[in-house]
Amino acid sequence: MSQDASQLLKHCYFPEPGTPVRLAVSGGPDSLGLLLLAIEAGLKPTVHHVDHHARPTSTSDAKHLKEICAQLNVPFILHNVVVEGGGNFEARARELRFGVLPSDALTGHTMEDLAETVLLNMLRGAGIDGMSPMIDNPTKPLRDVRRSDLHAFVATSGFQPVIDETNNDMAFRRNQVRQQLLPFMDEIAGRDITPLIARQAKIMFEERTWLDALSLDDRATSLEEADCRELQKWPKARLRRWLRVQLREIGEGGLWHPPTADEIERAIAVVNGEATAMELSGGRRLSRKDQRLTLT
Image (cartoon, rainbow, N blue to C red; front, side, top):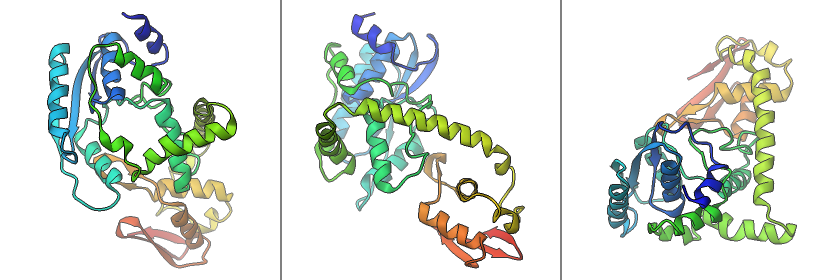
């Protein structure tokens, strides 16, 4: 094992050597680094690659990655998806990707990805869950690895990563956060704030875990069983947390989507009798009659 790999593996959360793992690999330096580190860690990887056919070079990129896997003697599985034209490309591509990838596929998200996700979630108005992404997530084994260290490791591996030109497209908000917002925040703070954001995310995760434990009994009460007169006695934070679970919606790839902050506030108004009903995403409707709630 190389010294660079040994140092990086100290910051990884891989399973025990010899464990079969499935990896989501685009071929870029992050996911290629994931593949190389998984091999160094003694795992038995199978590579899953999703070709979105959204770039002219995507087919050749898939072929290049397949050749790398052949050299490494790693099984390669290709998934072809097509993202229709229109707005919100990133979100729709992500939904399709999650729909074809194994649910336990490891990804090459680094500490920078964690920090970027926190900031993106802040811009969307996320709560405590959005402020603590990826922490304790077994599919994100590189979340404590710095992107620059990972790229330096890949550069010495002898394998050439593919270059996704959309990573420089400022039409995508994540690229704006990565290339503009984070460097600007570093400049204002006079320090590298990525580790600071990551540390805050870990603290928020611990707080969230504790709140989840406190609200475990609440979750056992279903929406239809609850009495609005009792719910009205709860602290608003407790009611908000219960409603986030009760009103979440399952999306593509089996992913759960919580209601928005605005939907929660309007749902609380229904619980308090300030409104008789409200509309939710997915064509759903929450209504109240005789102190009971119904979701249709």
